[in-house]
Length: 218
Image (cartoon, rainbow, N blue to C red; front, side):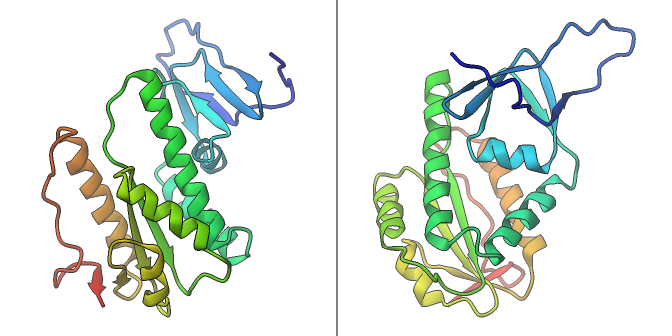
């Protein structure tokens, strides 16, 4: 095992009782380009660290807890949106990366012996794919057929719903105006409802295309 001493995790242990002795420590072993965080029970993470964890560059043990500032979700979404707008992440690359990350996370849960719900993947587009998404489309449809995940496409503004429908199995939805806040509140509430259910359950969720919802079907 080779350890790179110059590779550090920009995270810090959470605040503890000032009167308590802190015997925790943080270390990371770099193996094949990924690192494993161990020895600390709680981490405060920033936007960059969150994205590295999501990208599979940092693996956090199931025993540890991650906490983050309230704005970290908005910061992460803004960072990803900016990268997409700059052309740093194409449609095909983004889809394939998401599917790979989901597969990796499911493998982690299986190794830990943890049950998990079928993952949700959301693709939000304000246009149409500008690269070849044939392979990504095959991966989406194969995964849906095996019930490996649920893939949703959401079109914003001038998005080509027809092109999105060619990728997704489910009918893409059109975002009403700029109702991003309502979308993410719905997503958070829905995931909370699912997490409180049993893995074998099919909980009823609010309809996003209802008159007061964030989307409309086309």
